[in-house]
Length: 156
Image (cartoon, rainbow, N blue to C red):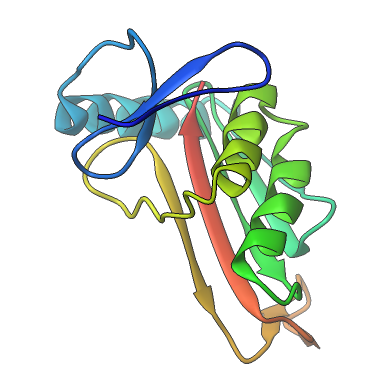
């Protein structure tokens, strides 16, 4: 297993699926964690505790915050994956300094890997796109120049 030490002293290692984990973190059943997180998110939505807000730094950026996880997605017009991830890290910092630091370390150590949905709670994925678009609340279509669509979900 590959280990790295971050600038704030944390030790991270890469698991079999290519995910960076904190040294000494528990090994859990990702399917059970995901079921619990989904149930809690639904309870938050029904109880009015879930909130959505605009994310600064991303084109059409949106954050969905529940008591168990934060889900952020949006578009970037940066030229490379590394610069897009740095931009994402700046946007994520408001919600989680440790997650933002992990993204910065991923770029710093040139370990740029996606973590697609695998039944667990963590997701980091992106894809190259020809542009950005969305419908506003009045069903008017808005568009913008973009090169990447990016999505990240992390637990609290």
